[in-house]
Length: 164
Image 1 (cartoon, rainbow, N blue to C red):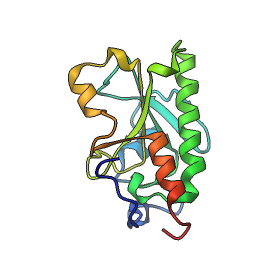
Image 2: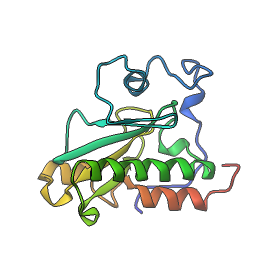
Image 3: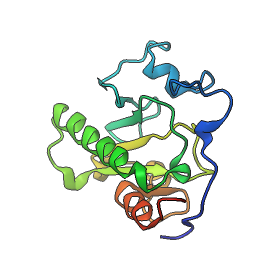
């Protein structure tokens, strides 16, 4: 994939504003997960939360996030693969609960840093892709410098050593 490198990065979640419980008081997604913003949570358990994107790029556009603060996708290691897979599974469940049954017309992916508006790891779940407008198709374009699919991220993480 163009522009994506498997280099070691500093984990954003280790900054001083992140508490021992995995809460970053400056992070909007941490606030949403902790019900400080009044955002409707479509799913929330100990590990994963899901809510609607405030600027939807498709008729169904959800964000799936870890409930504890995790930095962007560049900060992940091979050990995060189960988390990313669980995020995708949660996204599929939310789509099915919202009557989206054609999973071949769905996009699961992450914006690649520095093209992230929020540094808390978040999976974009978009459906149907065939109904996305021109700008959304550009913004969530596969094989671009700014967007990586969930499958591409999992492959990238699996290719990393445990120490990266």
